[in-house]
Length: 294
Image (cartoon, rainbow, N blue to C red; front, side, top):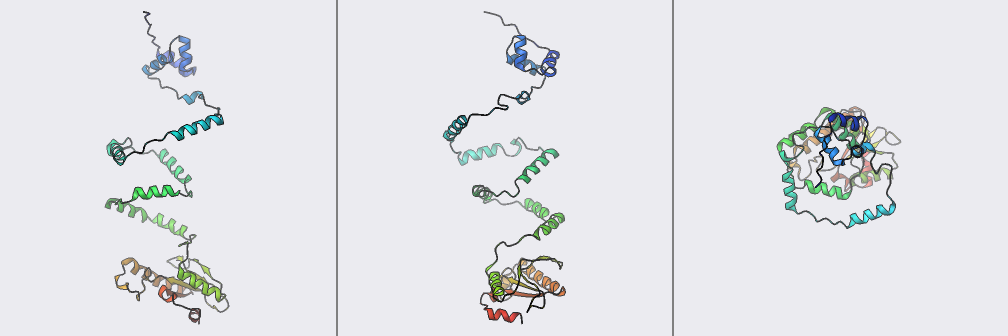
């Protein structure tokens, strides 16, 4: 039996060869006459940090696979049919990674990491989600009930003055809703038949409570005054003649107050405001609409 001599490399030697001369473990092992593993162990023993394989370029640097090889890899991966995890398995995995057991528990991302995440999210802006992704999000949030603390946090975040200001600036250029309601379309058809020029969803900035009106009619032949027509839904705008008027919630009541306030401010700015509820528009005929402008 041949006795193997134990090789011990000094830290000074390893720093000289591995760091200063930038040699690999294999190159050092060939020079000494030992295995690569021995050199690695000595680096570990001397607390010398190993270099990443990419430091030396790596085998695949500037190399490309043949198309046939790529095709073979695709076929091989397609054949790998992995069994689906059961709900019980998913629960066990979730419990094992929840709370203090999670490897990220208690950790806070550095400013640099947060910046990287922010830039990554900005790259996704404007990209539409696929139907399968939308469905996954729906399924994940189905049946979830937010705690009072979470609701409070959301409310604080939504009511920040800078957020409200930015939202109002962006809202100027939005057409909301994107699809006109049936009562709005009916009024637009009446105006077209009367050969009157009009604009839909024009942003009115002359008043305190700026908004997009339903229909704006500029001054023209037969219309001596700037006119705004609002097509209000009976429920959403609190029609007092609506059967459910007594059961209106605070939102409907506040919307009605806002409508009155906007009408008052518009009239002070020289506009003529015509507010029509859905129950008035639906049975309306063209001759009845003409009477409004007299």
